[in-house]
Image (cartoon, rainbow, N blue to C red; front, side, top):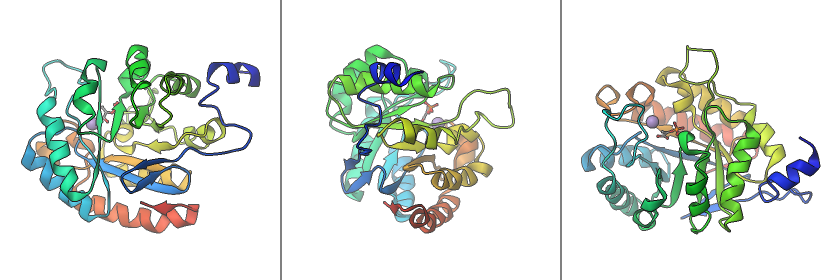
Length: 279
Ligand code: PEP
Ligand code: MN
């Protein structure tokens, strides 16, 4: 793609000559080029008690953004679909007293009004990266959007999708590399780590990594998370469960709170080495 086509396809997402980087504030947490941000929590909100105990453990490790799916995009319609509106309520109710921000996935633009009161960052999942109707509606709101890369999407397509949100006037878009489909079966997806430094050249938007959905197996998640930090990511989003074998969704890739705590302490040591402040 030539410089001219790039500028006409995603002018707002493109890195400008002045080299500025977008930084996004969520509560007291700054997400962007000067910081390394960790977002963590269960794949799905399963119950109030489950979410509360995981949120407390994650918060103890020094993390300020809680993840948890209330609306789950499952491959089979017979799998747990999430607690939906009830789950959104629990996220707000549990995160607020801990002073944590909330990130959760939105699948349907009609649900936007239900999200705005409880949620600080709205996540667009890999399966919806090119749901242009949803992206256009998210361009109209004034809340940060985490846009995950589709599992079969190029970086240009990711930036084109981000452009839909930016064009609507919502300037707060965070990109997320979460692994792409390849012929390899040892992992759930193949984490494209080179996407991080390449995106940093193409765009001013923050770029984070999801090592959990890329790996699909908890044993290699810490290594991928550290690699993401080393390669210049602005943060990670990680799945943590206090009883992974009983999780209703993605238990095999969930870190225990203990393993997560060790990972966070390593990330705190590593962040300054890549000129980033952990937050
Ligand atoms: C998730 O974060 O829960 C999720 C479904 O991720 P992805 O869209 O990357 O598969
Ligand atoms: Mn998951």
